[in-house]
Length: 160
Image (cartoon, rainbow, N blue to C red; front, top):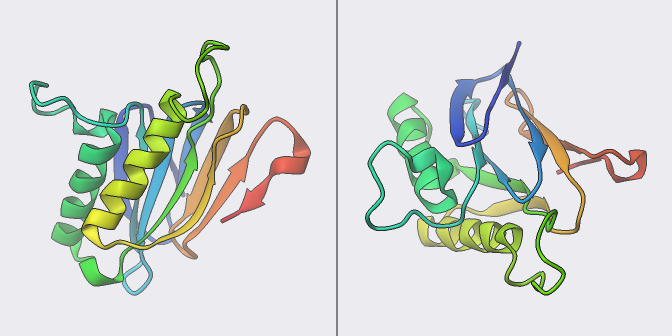
């Protein structure tokens, strides 16, 4: 079985579910997984940090708030917080101005926000495929914890 994860959405499921996020450009896919329980989640996040005055209910749109929300739901569903691992993909520099550096692009800021948030939560980041200037699609297999990353060129498909 597979489920699609749309922009600004996160899905929490149990093995043997396959979660898919299509068309990642500067967006970031964040996969969280508890290998002991087979519980995991995939978020398709748009922006790095939730503004202080943003309406409640928009957490899935932001990398930092989305990760916190996913961890909370995973633990409520029975995941062991201490066993969680993370993988990220996306964060490309797709449509930024030529004057924008790769360090300041939305994609780079999304990746940085994920690393900082995961570090603050003590969740190890065990795999990533971020940056560059290519779009990606990911499949996160909750039976194995493997995240497959696909792009338009055949030579860049990989498993993290």
